[in-house]
Amino acid sequence: MESQLDSVQPQEIPRVPGHWLLGNLLEFKRAPHRFLSALAKQGQGLVQFRLFHKKMIAITSPECAQQLFKSSSKNYPRGAQRKSLESILGLGLITQEGRLWKHHRRVVAQAFRPDFLEYSLEQNSRLLAKLLQRWDGMANQGKSVDVVDETRRITLSVIVRALFSKDIDLSKNRELYGAIVNANHLMFTRHTSLFRFPDWIPTPLNRKVARTRAVMDAFIAESLAEKESRSAGLGGEQDAATSKDIADHFLQAEAAGDISRAQIFDEIRTLLVAGFETTATSLAWTLYLLARHPEVMEVWHAELDSVLAGDLPKWEHMSQLPYTEYIVMEGMRLFPPAYGLTRTSLEEDVIEGFRMPANASIVLSIYGIQHDERYWQDPEKFDPGRFSREWREDAFLPFGMGKHICIGSRFSILESMLVLASIGQRFEIELISSAEVEPNAQVTLLPGSAIQLRLESRVS
Ligand code: HEM
Image (tube, rainbow, N blue to C red):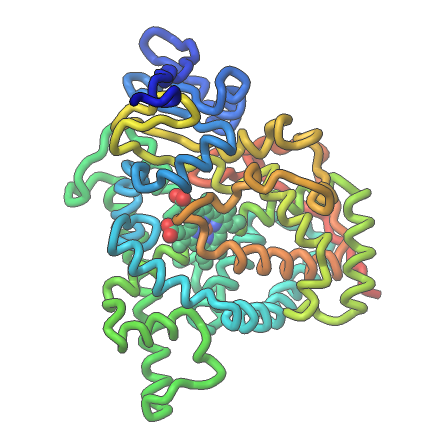
């Protein structure tokens, strides 16, 4: 017998009006994060819109996101986005699906185990003390700090240390820095181009992609060779001081037949790119927000001064700095680096009573959900303390959700806490300009204009 539930016909997903030819292309291109955010007001968790000829479905509620990304995730692979990133990243976790992804997810996840996080944080604590000497110099000379450039320098040094236990000299490695910044930009251009030439045709874009990948690969090859010659010098034994980084873990997995050398390159390229710009952007926004909110800074400095009492921030302090963690989370809520995630439907489905067609292009509006007043009180306010009260966990999605949830989320939060604590302990920060900075949505949600800070030492 047909149940009452079966007899209820799924509804059609509501559509937003648009230009007869372009659809919603212009509003979307202008500011995709805002366009998607505004859609939430018109629909019931799912809304259809059109980019020229391409139909899209936006997911704007945590309930629908939950069903798509968790309960029915098999029906919703990453689709087209994945393909457009492959020529730069290779076949790493971000670009794989299916059995190969599952196998690699297990291998890479083991690299991010708790003892690696502790090891990495201890290494970074010393590294940051060194990196921030540059900031001391700038503070003494009254020079302003270009926040985006500085946070990129820091996160690149941190990810290289986490991967290979080595320091990079950025004045000598400008090419690597440029290549990784470029990789994000190229991925965006690739992803948003209406037409794509095959990789083997030497278009200016394809040549840039090949060059970027070659620079990253030369660096990875050199770093792995250094590791192997060090280990050969130790008679094949692992060096205890450097046996805990990600590359060591991959080399062990290679020796056990779990991963090939080409796959190690794919995964390291992926981690370099995924772990760099996202965290750098999030740190830049958070410093901007802090500088605009002296009342938050006051509470924060009190926490840092009482917990650290003049020590360098270290692993054991992290669990005692809840307000610092809330600051990191609130920065990611207001300016989520990954502001939208794309998926494709394989078969027709029903999501929260709506008919999801097969082969639909879907985008989850992370920015929209994190700015929605149905889930967040006073959503535009920078209020780190909200995380000490009751809050909707399913409406906080900076790292995505479900099986592809960010593998570096804990690493990134701890790294951000460490960087912020190290800066907050040493400096008062002040914005040079009081003008509001608007986001510029590329692969990540970048600041649309420069953020310049003036520093004043807090250490007498
Ligand atoms: C603020 C920092 C970060 C943000 C906002 C962020 C965000 C995300 C999001 C939203 C996803 C899910 C993508 C999807 O479902 O399609 C993801 C996946 C991923 N992230 Fe992150 N991420 C950050 C930092 C990092 C770091 C530090 C690393 C590594 C060192 C990293 C490595 C990865 C990888 C490898 C994946 C793919 C996981 C998979 O598909 O199995 N991320 N990240």
